[in-house]
Each structure stands twice: as C-alpha cells, then as structure tokens.
Amino acid sequence: MNYLVYGTVEFEGDVIKLRVYRPKYKYALYGRKDNSRVYGNTIMFVGFEDNGLVNLLENNNPPTVMQRVFNQNANCFDMPSFYDNGEDNKTIYFADESDKQFYKFEIPKDFRDFVAFRFNTEDDPNLNEPILAKVSKDFNSISFYGSDKKITKVPLTPEDLETKKMVFSMYERAYPEGRYFYCNPAYNIFEEQGIEISQYEEFGNEGEGTFLLKGSEAYPKGERFEIDYNDKTIIYQYEKIEPIIVEKPKYSIKEKSIFISECGDNQ
Image (tube, rainbow, N blue to C red; front, side, top):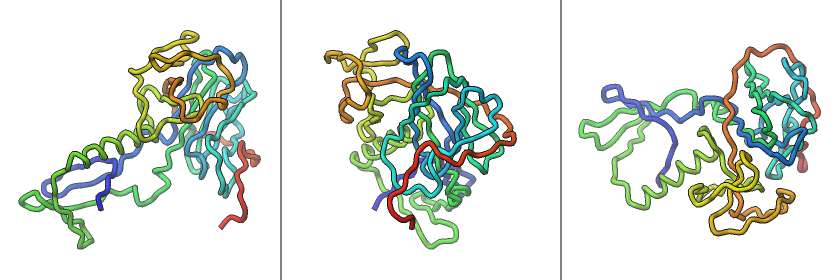
C-alpha cells in the first residue's frame, strides 16, 4: 500500500528528516465584498469542531470576551457551519484557550462574507518531531531510526503521479494559504476536482468576486443555499486577510457557543 504525506524532506549527510507540513498560522481568514448587505456579516467556519474561540462583537478592541464556536464535547455536525452575524464588527479575533496570543484580522472595507479556517495539525503531538531515517549507499532505500521498517525506492507510475497531484491539490484546498479561496455559493470547494478559475469570467457588482462559468447564463441572486451544492455555474472568490499576532490580554469565555452540536451520548 502506498502512502502520501504532505511535507518536506531535509538532508544531513546520509540522514534525512521527514517533516509533516504545518501551515504558518493556526488560523486563516478569507473574505469578499457583498454589496447587497450594509450591516453585519456572514462567516463559515471550517475546522473549529474540536477547539477554537472567536470574537465577532462590534466594539471588540481589545476583546474582553471570547466565545466558543462549538460547544465542548460536540459530537454531531451539519456542514457547512454557517453563521449570520448581526454585529457590525470591524475586527475578527481567533484564539485557542492554550494560546498565548490572539490572531487578529482587520476587515477590509465592505467585506461582509467570510470563510474562516482553524488548522488542527498542532493538536497532534506526533507531528511535533521529524521522522528520522538513514539513506542506503546506493540511495535506493531508507531505514527508519528506532524501527526495523525499510522503504525501497520504486519508480512512480503515471497513475501514482496523478494521485500525488490530486492529493496535494486537495490538501491545498483543505489548508489554504494562497491569495484566493474559491467555492460555490453553497460552500462546495469541489474537493477532488477543484475549481479552474480560468474557465470563469467575473460578473455582477464590481469587486464582489463573483464568477460565472463561461457559456452559462447568469441567474438572479437568491438565498445562497437554494443553489444546488454540486452546481459549478457560480463561483465566489474570497481574498486572504493577513493576521496580526497580538499578545493575549485577559478575557472571559462565553460558554454559550455559536453552534450546539450534540447527537446522543458522548462516548
């Protein structure tokens, strides 16, 4: 069985270090203008099921209270986790309880539609240290330290290369760090195939990041979830907002979470 792991390989003589890739920041925020809305915002949360605090209040500089996105011990989830925020905040804060800092995102003018990510890689202690291995003299195999496991080099087939390309592309969509993030109005990122934005043309209000599949007919805006989840006709382009890392002041935690997710007894 073949395994693909997204990461880096470092060489020191005949010793290699295999490091699982980590995003630069634990949190990422992407946003877009929505000229149809003049107050408040909407935000879709990705990866907040196990942890994560947020402050979406209007007067929150500095934040004195943080709110759980999901209740503690949440065990049942309906996707997407989409929140309609009635506060007209100009800044969004994220943090874990264990963090020593806030991730502060200053909202650009007229941005009212957001997708927020919390990356869970730091929650796994097994990812903190690199995997060490020794390369054979003929460079055809590696042996792992502290184990009798040995991997022999084999040529990659065209199918292997295609799978590698697909997995890396899926990873980049699940852990976005590029300038833009794309999805349809129902928040489908088309995980396996992705979205080829060159097949689209921008339309609608200027600066909203709304794209129409070339050759398709535009349709009036409606409720975003009235759109078929698998429909690729309309694509939204969200722009990355860079975080500002600030020292975490004292705050209280609002125990009532944004989402309540419980299905039966927690095990």
